[in-house]
Amino acid sequence: MKHDTIAPADPVADEQILPDCLALVRAAYRDDPHPDLAARLDRLDRLRTALVDHRQALIRAVQSDFTTRPGAETDLLEIIPVLESIAHTRTHLRKWMRSSRRSVPLGLWGARAAVHYQPKGVVGIMVPWNFPLFLSLSPLAGALAAGNRVMIKMSELAPATAKAVEQMIAAEFDKAEVAVITGGPDVAAEFSALPFDHLLFTGSTSVGRKVMQAAAQNLTPVTLELGGKSPAIVHPDFPLKTAASRIAFGKGLNAGQICVAPDYVLVQRTKVDDFIAAYTKAVQKLYPTQADNPDYTSIISPDHKSRIEGLIEDAQAKGAIITSLAPPAEDFDGTQKLPMSVAIQVDPTMDLMNDEIFGPVLPIVAYDDLEDALAYVNDRDRPLALYYFDWDKDRTQHVIQSTHSGGAAINDVVTQVAADDMPFGGIGASGMGHYHGHEGFLTFSKAKSVLHKGRFNTTWFIQAPWGKALFRMYVWLMLKWRG
Image (cartoon, rainbow, N blue to C red; front, side, top):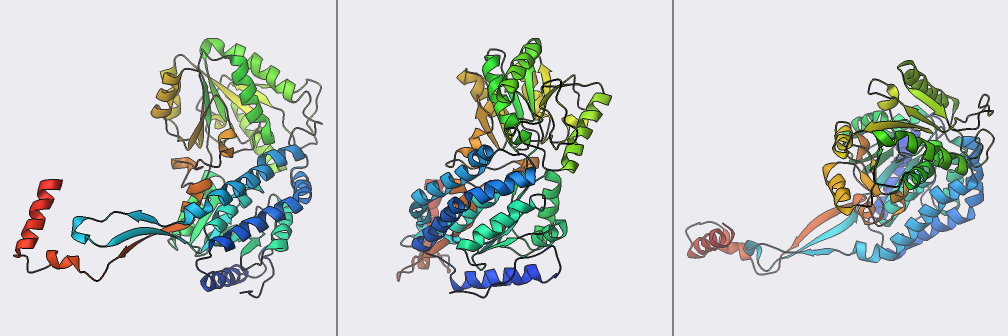
């Protein structure tokens, strides 16, 4: 059924815009509360078509928001992963939608039990600025696959991309299916307070706390994808050149503005200098220049650049040594770029070692043995990702079992996010809940337990009066078999 549409939200002229939009989308959901496989596949196909048709416009919009961001990065890190996610979901959706048969206890003999996966209803998605395409469209694909209607709040720090996504979605979807909302922090705060059936937020831990608090007023279930300080541990037996090259690749992408970017690296004390030399070579091979290099991404805004510069200044004032890995003659003044750099002689009093960096600075922490490195990680908030470099399988298993993190990658960084058949999500300060793949389908679905009883009433054997011989036999059997 086609519903009347409403204008997309502008930066809050009318405080009734968001509730009206939610009412429109919820009414559409109630008209079709359990879309069949064909309807869900159609929505996924339309999303794929929209993404392919608007690819160049989206790339230009992201470049505009960042000032400099290579189209190759947008393809590699945003558009292609969404297309992969849609393809993976289409392949498995029929199986995911099937109800799952469950067993029943002896006292319910003759009954049938099953779990049905029902759409939750209207899902809200709050999108950050660092990957505005992937972090809006990937959860959108999961929510549509689960049969939901969706409202998306785009980031005000990426306004061109927000407008491009709005136009892309409008080309293929009625606003009663998917509504794209723009606007500033006031709109975001109002959005998080709406009575959604599920709310997914990606962003900082501090804002995540506020979103969860707002959602709690409506008892709205939340998935929080936050971040934190994801460590990389390099075992002394691992080739430093290989580790440095792979870490440089992950830290250089999007200029380190990735929630799973390696935030700091732990290196055995006697190998710190060798690691810095290898990392410097790896960075300079990837980015021979940085200030004017179109392959090297800018910091999203002057405010965020100032924030990272503040972390550097605080660390230097407290004794850290920060070394730029850009050519000495390069001048970053007047740009929104910051050079890739390393920080040594860091300590826990520095803001650099407490705040998520979300930029191209890589602190290096020296350790004496592996247990010291693990203790350092475990003494801090649980990160969204943990990276460990070691060919030894037994030590690797020990590290995985001895640490907590949202996810992990062995002998690589960042790329674990691209595996659609694995859940993505944090733990503790790095978030809660999962999406991607089957876990995304489950996150956006209500697992409804349904017990179906036939004409024969088996509870007659276990109801009052309790003195019946059959009841005494039932109790005896349960105690014998289960006790």
